[in-house]
Length: 377
Image (tube, rainbow, N blue to C red; front, top):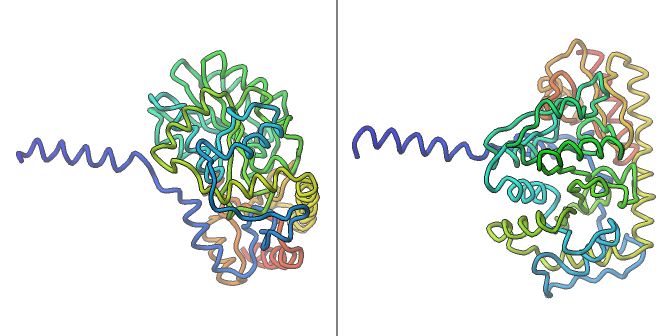
């Protein structure tokens, strides 16, 4: 092989190796969650330990059945929840895979992706795998971290295929209302772009799925994780136009092909039980009572106030003088056996994200320990 061929081969290998980048946020979480006793990093309601804990039922695991293109009864149940047809429902292994499949479907032929900033890193990384160009749509603190449709108009063009957002915003907990989503959807439609809204946290503010982003002609993503405490089922869904959903299902033939029947069937049984869904609603309300510890911390440390969440169980705290968030988190773990998220992993350096939906005794103690390190910092 001559030198020119070697160079070409090397360049091609480098290009291929950069088609995807690690999701540092999730890798960090998987390393650090188990290292500390007091967790201000768990962003879901408490995990359900036994199926018998869920009202209604009984919920009986079934290991065999047909669920090509998603369990039909589950898609019917989700369709009723959102007010759409079953062929408008994509079922995948968690919200993260839904985000990835939708990004791959919409960006199959490349194009530009516009992704909010700050954001939940896996959403950016998913779009980055397929887009020819990545643009960040700032969610500015002076605008309460809400996306500005006028700013979107300055960024979008005819090459834009995907606009990706979160609601409730991860990491700040700020909520976009239907009017704002309608405006963003209108801008996207003018350019033939698709709006993807990851709404895994939104039921903490709104349990009526008819009022989620699909009502604004966007693609909405949900899951059995954050608001249900059933992350280990690995069941997520996306709701949108049948054309995009069909394309995502086609793309999934390269990945999961079809999901584990047993988990989809359990999700179908659980979501189809009215008593269970009422219980989940009450459970998210109970988890959000941990907000009092977050509010108390800000009262005691006024300089930590960054932006007050609208709902949910996550909030941002500013560090003194914009300190190094990674070093702060390392010190918090080493000195006080407590873990929270570095804000820089969301694109907010100098801050930390805390979650307060877990056991109240543990959360209160975690904030106490956080305060001790904060005052020393």
